Length: 263
Image 1 (cartoon, rainbow, N blue to C red):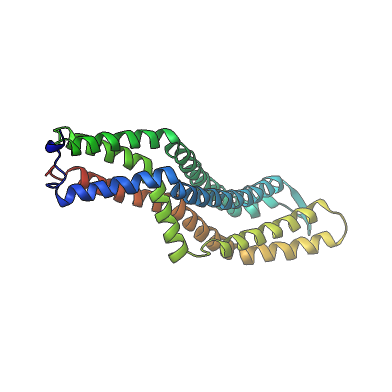
Image 2 (image 1 turned 90 degrees about the vertical axis):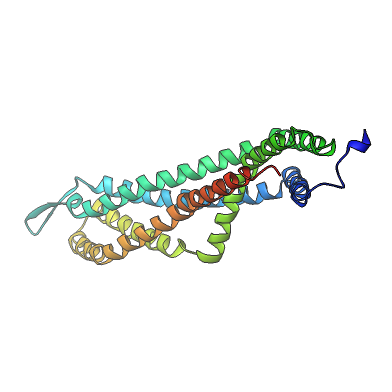
């Protein structure tokens, strides 16, 4: 029986697959890659949630102010008419942020699924079966088992690798890409709160205060729009576009590996 074993005649590629299998099994059971990817997704989801909350706060303030009418200098006007451009921008921003948050939630849930011990057990079983087929005279089932092992390994690690690649891009090329823009949005939110307090107040100063506050809002509107668009681009890039790009690249690489000749 042992004479039929083909270890001495194993090709360099087969030895390479053996080392890859050992590495993948170690990573699967050790779980460090999954924890690092999970921490990054959780942090990204928290940041996106805070940004989304700010956007919804602005939307709520504008909605509350819409329909409010004031008599100033014998002219009646609606505050909502002045805030309509702001409302349009923030509603579109909120809609796209919903997509970004949904993407991160899906990534988080899928990462929990693929990092479950079941996948590690299946991966280990396939690795053992592949190893047996390799040791015992290179059984005819070796190529099929190897490809099955690689498919399961792809499902097990693809998402974590994509998230880690996204983490690398974020840390190297996009450090603090959203903080300044979010601060602009928060500052604008504070200005709207000031308008809301003035509208609900009373007294002769109300007219002059509102005039000053609306002038300030109009002066900062361009900065608000620019910051909001930049923030939206950064969040979409990190939560949707880069993960899809890396996943596509990994999928093409996996397809190329599976199409390699058996010998």
